Structure formats: C-alpha cells, structure tokens
Image 1 (cartoon, rainbow, N blue to C red):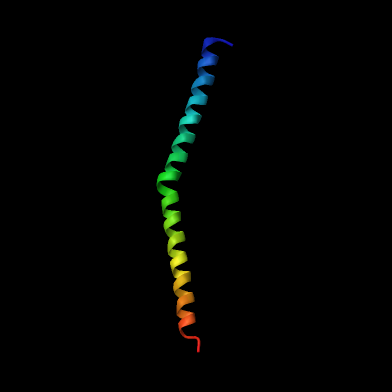
Image 2 (cartoon, rainbow, N blue to C red):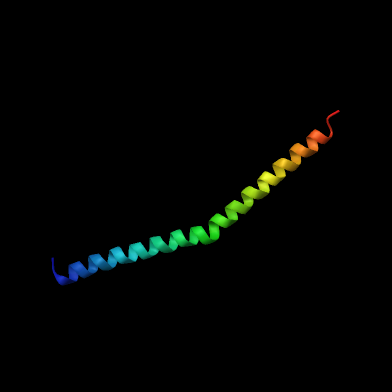
Length: 58
C-alpha cells in the first residue's frame, strides 16, 4: 500500500473512533442521567400508589 492509502485508512479509523467516542460520551452525560431520573420518578409514583391503596384498606 502506498503512503496515501495508509494515511487514508488511518484517518478513516481515527475519525470513526472519534465519532464513537463522542456518541458514548454524549450518552453517558446527557441521556443516561435523564433516564435515571425518569426511573426514579416512576419508582416514587409506584410507591405513592401502593401507599394510597393500602391507606384505604379497611
């Protein structure tokens, strides 16, 4: 392979690695905290429903 082909292959791999790293970082810093907060709200809502139902049992 010539210098150009080696450079092109290396550049392509480096670009793909950078894009993958950016996507993973974005998911960890933006998407995952939002999902965790939604899960926490769901747990609190379920607990409140259980508590409300048990309070009205005779």
